[in-house]
Length: 562
Image 1 (cartoon, rainbow, N blue to C red):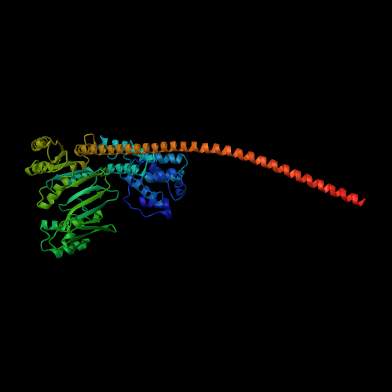
Image 2: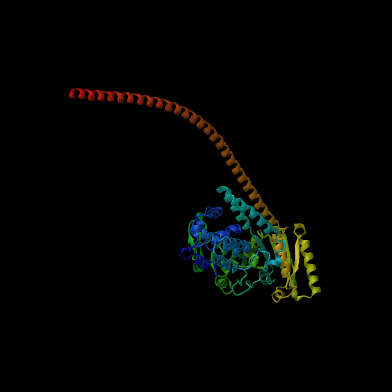
């Protein structure tokens, strides 16, 4: 069952339109409570302060839209292996045990969550287990996430809560870039297919031309085609006097040129219906259009329409971003599959070098039949000098074509050649002999699994400089958040203490006023009593006098009668 169908089932007519890319990261216990809400119990849940506090801690409003966004975000985070499925299910089971949700609702939730794939954080994970042996990064990130969740559970002020949430989000958005280079036909695509566990490169739906391809993670596969800007087309020798042809082709692609003044040179991007359109502005046909290439989002099966050798659009394609739901990419790992370094197009080779400046690990492939060429060595040295990569992995591909003795001889020569050229750079290199063919045929010594373990340890192990810096930055920010929270709390305590002293003084004054009023009240009561007594005496005398008069009149009347 897909996510949209599941949400439609539990919400019915109340199901709202949501951004499918929404992702929420939080403690599994909090997310379990949010996932437990549906159309039947929504009003009951929303009436609880604790439930609203969970939404507020995530920076969300206490309404049905925010709740559904949180549910979708939690599901996407689970798909991306950012949260633990086993912990989520355990928390939901507690809710069912405590009769907070019904057994039927728990069964429906559990069935859906289990359908999303294997749990990557429980103790029995299988997929990817072979190359996650030294995952120090995620262990420490999980510990820091617990601290962050505890801070948010204390209901801090909005400033502290936002800072903690942003720190957590930034840590989870830390990207690890792996650049894969090599001469044409070095076997990059085949090896990457083996590493990814899926034949996606070199297949019918993947670029046939020498385009740079960036592989990224997404729950749902799609592709993004990036086109050269007009200035870059000039550099490639494509623009020249073909402006009408370019305008027509870019118009077919949804990319449009407009003439404006030179001061308005910029690019615009507008997404509509899943497809991207871009507008380039220039004062004339020969001026720079935009620093950013136009882009178009397509299905993976449509890539060939733009990149195949017989496509009229191929020469306008700068790079391809390929989004796939693959295990190796789930931890924000970006793999840059570069064109061959012996590419005859200078602008395309420079594009590769620009990506190299952002890479954390450089993986250079050499065909064992032609390894450690001068072109290989020059490119490795040049790339390492202009990037912040701290490690180099050299892979000798097609290792199956050589006998063991020949392979050892080639490996020794390649190692010696590379180390001699890179010694002054102070960057260590690791060497692997791999055979993607043997891997796909089920061979035991393909070298692919060994390199996969090295790759994951390099990115997330204890020696990973980037993961260490990411953890330190997260830790430092949480420390700052805690200090701010403590300062805010201390300030609040001082305010309360000051208010308490003020209230004590006010209470003392009120007590004095009360005593004075009580004394005054007694005086008034005495005076009233005296007046009442006096009034009673006068009334009695008058009544007696009236009685005597009445008696005298009666006697007088009797005497008269007699």
